[in-house]
Image (cartoon, rainbow, N blue to C red; front, side, top):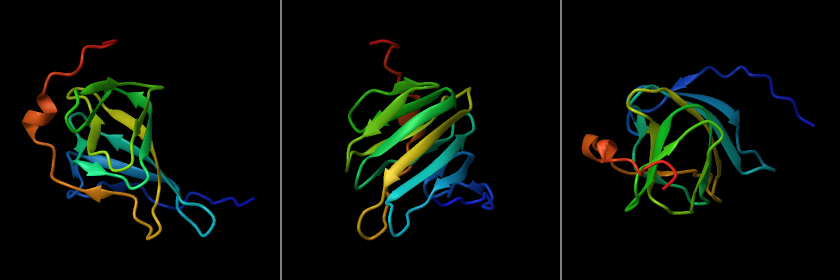
Amino acid sequence: MQVTRNRIETMAGRSEWFTGAVYIDAVAAPSNVSRLNASSVHFTPGARTAWHTHPNGQTIYVTEGVGRARRRGGPIEIIGPGDRVFFEPGEDHWHGAAPDRFMTHLSMVEVDDQGNSATWGAHVSDEEYAAAPKPEGA
């Protein structure tokens, strides 16, 4: 058993990877015996990731608020507390808060053999973000 005391400060999300104010708290970091990289990611209203992919996929678990998630070519999905979203390995996608709500999710990914967890692309445009969400339950 290994106990790691929380001595890591909350970090602001990098402007190359996010639009708007995003804050990240480390939950788990890869080590010599684990490939897991997990973070609690806090999005302010309207904040979102850039388009990106993960070599081994990504699971997000919404802990509070209301958010949006979208894969390339698919509809915007509205997500809320308790919802889980899995993005396939290499699937281009983005996720973030709703325009008028905060949203926090746990991000869980496995790094590849080189320690990479994501490949980042272009920022999600305001038009892409504002596209009509998929009706709830549809």
